[in-house]
Length: 321
Image 1 (tube, rainbow, N blue to C red):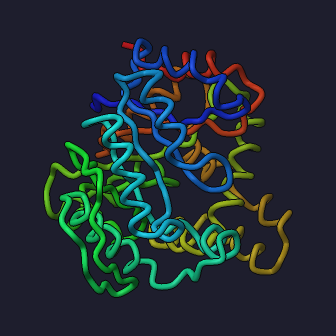
Image 2 (cartoon, rainbow, N blue to C red):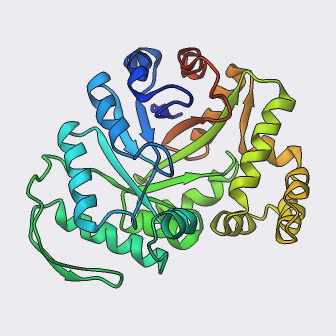
């Protein structure tokens, strides 16, 4: 049973400054963590900086920021600043992100993703010590960089990982892994790769939830999310590795250019495995199943409910007794 219970910020549908009252109450409701993401909305650090002041008891994490979209020195400075603002309460999750975000939106070549993340982890390890870094990595070089504001406690480095190579990297050179788009049962498959170099490695799981919504509506939201994500090559490869053959009809329709057909081909069973939905009490039970199977830090990510009252949503998903 996990002692941690996280949620993704910022919450949907509410301006960031207006979320203060909700975040302030999270520790009293049983939340221990807030984790940010970074794609085309808010950046990964600003919501955490605000939360560090609004609710000083919360642990803060990025799940994730891309290794590509900031230079090594800039990433080190951003992470060190957050670590200094919240000593001992910040964890840096980094990953490859995707070709869409890296290449199409940021005009950066999406080359050698495994090596890029590995090199970034190695650079950050050294940079956080305050030592001068002059090094040639496989994917970039750094000449004479010294972090000018060394945090009292270096943040843990967590690697976003899907398949065995990156999962092993997360456990071998990182302090653990950030995983998403997997079922509670899939955790039993991925966890041993992360913990091959130590049972103490953290596993953070972003878990998509649609609470207190009728099954047809929830599955509609979930089916759209599955179609949007699991046709991305890295996620498709992940689920092929997991053996999720039920998605073959969706992938076939997608490859044929039939987007509507792909959406319709997603079975309810897959949505039910990958998207936690139903009464809030049932959702909490399913989240605990992730923890029972090896997740250290479950991070709930409500989706498709931008019109919902964020305070009520946060209360409904709180861990309870």
